[in-house]
Amino acid sequence: MTAPSWDLSFAYSGLSGEDYAADIAKVKALIAQIAELTPSDITNCQQALSLSEQAGILTQSLSIYANCLASVDAKNQDAALALSKLSSLGAELSQAIKPFTNQLSTGTDDFLASVLAGSDDVGSFERFRFAKTIEREKKDTLLSVEEEQLLSAMNVDGRTAWGSLYYKITGSMTVTLTRADGTEETMGLSQAVSILRKPDAIRRELAWKAINEAMRTHQVSFAAILNALSGSRLTEYKKRSKKKRVHFLDPGLKDSHIARETVDTMMQVAKENRHIVQQAGLAMAKLHGTETLKPWDALASMPSLVNSEPETYSFERAIAIIKKAFTGVDSEMADFVDMMVENNLIDAAPQPNKRLSAYCASFNKTRTPMVFMTWGNSMSDVITLAHELGHAFHNWVMRDMPVAQSRYPITLAETASIFAENIVRDALMAEAKQESDKLKMLWEEARV
Image (tube, rainbow, N blue to C red):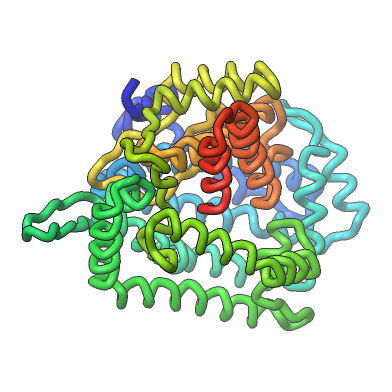
């Protein structure tokens, strides 16, 4: 089994397909219906919640589909155009629902209770209670409806556009490795990054230097992107601070559902124990034959302790390892892995214009999870795949819940994925018969 590619036909026939166009038309019609409603009316508020949920599910699925295509090929102009149009459509939906969001955030408890007492074909509006309660906690930092709508409109050509530019640049970049004999090898950035996890030390150094050179070419653009994103956020937080000061960490803390004290404590504990990580780095350097850990060795798999070829992991072997480990927890997890593979819901095949990183996405319309990564035949890739399958299984077990009740903060998301990672690590550690096998797993933990 080679590293697979996605089959997205379960979602849409294509960006130019009639089914894709039909869902876009549905979203526009739903937005038009919302615009006809009155925020101060309880029944109208209920209708707006129901309509916006329907529109949100479709918009998310349309966007995920286009983003999947753009992730596999950053030079896919049709996908880029679709994402741009959907960003504008999403902003239109956001602007349409703002008057109702404002009303539910600033209105009386009785008004909210009356709205949530209703129901539609999906079920009781109680499904919105948690989200609306969180929104009401932010009422002192709300702007006027008109200002909130303006922000939504401007983000299309602001934050969203800056983020898209970064992905376009990094996805379409080429990296050239120059060997000692002067010969060259050109590849996509994601392919070069995967070399950093492989056992060949010479190629790792060449790849690291080539990546830095390629990134240096775009350093002004990257700096502009970061400054624009940070600047726009700080400007927004300043505007929101009329009644209650918004610290730059506050939005992230709220979205993550954690307290500032939690973050401060975590950072303090990490600082106090950094010597452990430093010692691990020095130990890793020793196995690499260097006094200090070189940057191109930081992500590498553990070198062989004997004069033999370093161990590699095919995608098929990785699936077998993960399935066996998951079975030890719950057979449903192992069956889920089979389902993901059989339905081509994992895209791991290396591609020249593939985006960096790994992620899990889920189509709200069909409640189908997807996993994206670039396979490099290392133990690190096995752990990354387990991590993303942890996200995917988290989505899968919530597939029968209303979408409004299946949203979760990044803190909970990473709990699910790291749990899956540790299932695999613990299983491999338990099976280890030699000290070198145990060291390999400890290496992976230290390397991360």
